[in-house]
Image 1: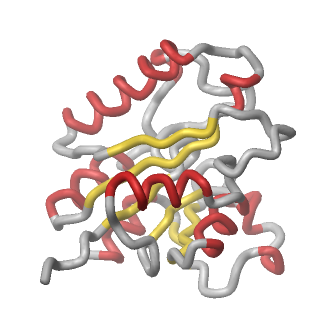
Image 2: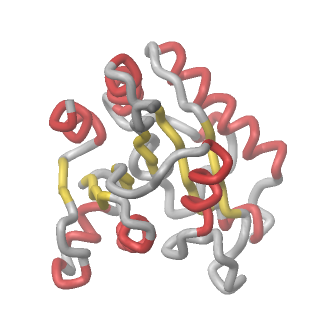
Length: 181
């Protein structure tokens, strides 16, 4: 019997990189949150695989194109590698908020696709996000919802009644990684 793969799914904006109300529109605008890339490397060294699941409505709005999104993710991968880390896969929803698709968080489509394509069970695996939609998507598929205070995390905490039971809360991705390990 094979050991169960250890996977951490991360939201991108506000968890790994600094978020922007006007969207991250170029690779140059993608800047990591302090210690987030080191946290990914720490998790990798402990045997955890990292997957990113990110809503990217800027595509639907025409704020950037797929080639630009690929350059943004290439920068994210390169900077993670420079810090000794590796992101195994990136899944994104290209649709706007009104598209009624299954892949846009809080719906679970991206998480289910990641599970199917990478052949791992979602149950109990951590999903780290900074918004209520991340936590709800995690709960929908039986993942462990984890909220970081970076990005929109502090704002999300302003309505504690909406946060799913059992959600773990950390200051940032590094605090989560250190506690997990």
